[in-house]
Image (cartoon, rainbow, N blue to C red):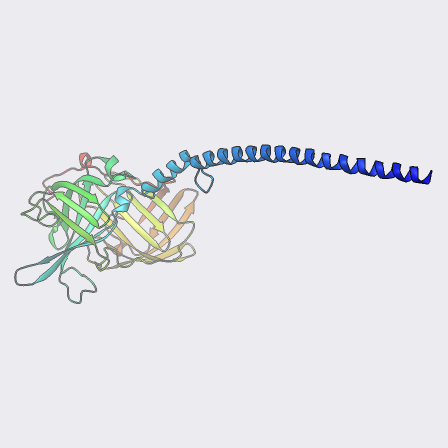
Length: 347
């Protein structure tokens, strides 16, 4: 009986082992099938992700978004052509005897109006270029869209010159027409027939190179904190040309362009107090010769009242007292050649 029971137990154990071995083969086969299926799905997912990455950059942008960013990167930083042309430039001249000279200009826009403090300088120490003779060039555009363009680099202008050193400050002549092109190296002037400075008499173009050694049109400007409530652009409406005053940090700019006369453009630094300021400035055509102003001010909303306490020192274009309105969009009028008026008193 005991032997029979033992045989039964051994038989059951053997059957269980045989069944277990058969189950393992089946399980292995099932596992292999499942693994293959999962691998196939994973491969499909990876292929889909690869296709998607072809349309996206590593930052996760789509191809279209990347194209937009690249196109934006090619464009300037939103500044107008007049603003991008601002800076100092020179042209080097050497004659057969080795005498050297530099033609210089500091281009200083006001808004999108383009002006330059020009001169001729001898290289005394090669570290700075101070002109021994100087004048102002007004580059008046024919088309406002060219000078205000944020992606164009060429403007057609009429160059009008005047100087306090000659002709009693009046224009030399009715001007010269030509084009100015902004390049990575500087400014290219073309045309300007018989002008002699921007373009040589025996050629039709001249490249003025960027040159930080050139004397500044406004040497009294400096970086510093200004008055927050004065900050911005203000305008005084009147007949002829409007008078603009702009406060930018520690500096003040004064500007007026009458249709029939030379530009008035002055700038300098201010010391601010409560309800008043002092200013040390110069006009663009003065060769750095300064003048001082003392002024009381009052602000009521968008109205600025200025009262200069030293009227004898105030430039002719600036009234001793006046009410100015804030220009919220910050834009000054652009003068074009169709607005310029010449009379017998202009030259």
